[in-house]
Amino acid sequence: MSLVAQMMRLAPDAGDPLYVETFLRCKLAAHTTGRHHDLVWQLDDSRQGEMWAAWADGRAPESVLLLPDCPAHNGRSDQNDEACTLFARHRGPHSFDLCDPEIEAIRATPEYGRLTAEIDALIAAWRHRVQGTS
Ligand SMILES: [Zn+2]
Ligand SMILES: [Zn+2]
Image (cartoon, rainbow, N blue to C red; front, top):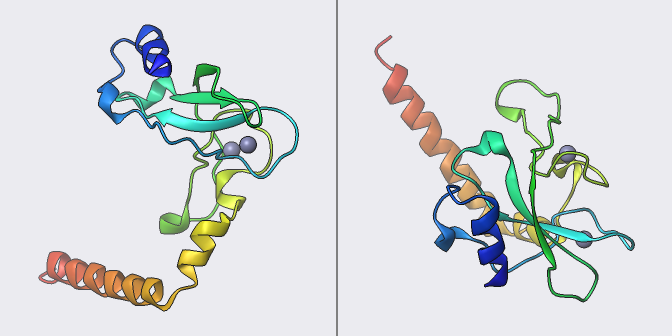
């Protein structure tokens, strides 16, 4: 709650405080020194950057920072283009070079494969419908 108060002071027009993330998990690659960071609030106007909580190992978050977005992209073309979701000048690799063990475990399940195939088929059908007459 004190984080929310801090954020309201930093960016009073940022958006709905109900959307503040209160379950924090460091978004950086595993590291042993320096502070952890998690995105706590995506501002309505993303040009301002986003709100990040910072904390030391095993401690409660002690500050909230308004940080500009990391400008990096993975350099691939069209739909594979991915922007780094971290903040500017973060340590470690960019988000698109990170593999999250929890997400990797989910991706390895047959359900995930089935769902992505289903979604691909739905997108293809939708594209066909939209562009079908041209
Ligand atoms: Zn960390
Ligand atoms: Zn980055």
